[in-house]
Length: 130
Image (cartoon, rainbow, N blue to C red; front, side, top):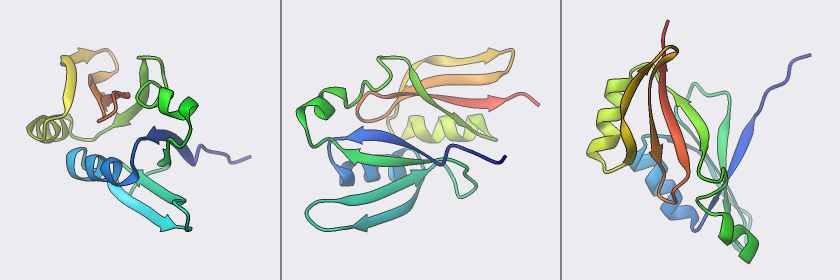
């Protein structure tokens, strides 16, 4: 059996502001941005072209969804972004104003730091030890 997680969803207030932040601030790539009319869009991004899982943006179009924007994991890390060059990505993101929670830490499994997206969702930037 061969299975994988293809997509995860993140609730956003606005497709275009989310695209701008993830592409221009976090350095992700835009995979798809398809419009289906009446405000429906299929927007996906990924950390790089060599991805297994992509993020789908879902515009918060109800009160229940709007209440969850930025808190999908209740203040815990939502996703881990693995990198092959922690210093490169950390420095670039810091220069672009990404909010980091604390300082980079050496852990038994690698170096990591928690950061937030434009809505407050928490991610872990991680370079795994070889």
